[in-house]
Length: 358
Image 1: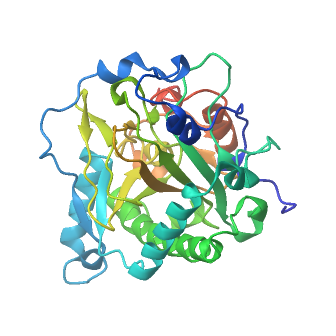
Image 2: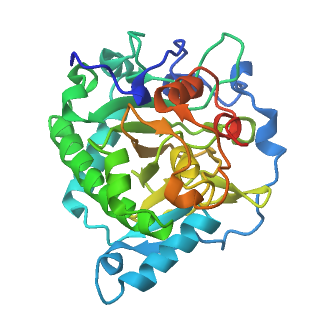
């Protein structure tokens, strides 16, 4: 393990819990969902009745094309300001890499439990490994999900004991994929900075070394899907997040205008969302958005989420260039303190970032 201090995105503690994939397999049609997974709010909170609501689509090829860049950057600004989410197409990540990684992830989660447990979290002060996060008591409700959580960048902070060696292509594909996402993030930060009136070099300095983690998610089918939640409502405590649907099973929902909206991911597009860090830095011009994952009766949902974070040493506060002659809408806090507050409690919407509002 690297001798440098582990990045805040990986520091934390979570109690061990039963493997949900194995639990789902063991439940037959006469069985009930265990009480710790029953979430009454799952069917109480309103969900939009229409499925024709679409996220804004940002075309990366147009964004970097001098002829179309200004128009696409304006679309990006509106997407960030009004939605906090968008789908990124023509992003340039090689299709063969994405397809290979999808095969690797699917094969990993299909392995016997004892093989996956070779990479289990060992509560060494980080939350890396195979298991679950945000479980802080024996009484709290649990998500209907298993995950593999690893730090991918900076390379010096990787802990390879959590990186699966089977399938044999998995490690190399993760390495290549993490670099591609770093390039994407750098490009997006350039336009996001300009859109909020900040020099791109400022964001480049804040996000230097490109701290990045990847969470691989497996949401088993559930015979009573209206009773469980795959991933509790939350906003991401990060700068920007990339979500890739490994299979075509949907389930992601975002909260907008007081109701949950089903998101239908385009094939091989990234669903991109802004995190709490961007909300604070932009003084609320852009806001992180609460989202969750729901399950279904027939098929597992498999996805990955990659979180792009700022340098570990920064102080989080609205940027002076954004505030101008106005007032800050958020207080200041060190990034390490912010992440500790995030991982020291169970997921609860935007409760952490909301504590900084002035």
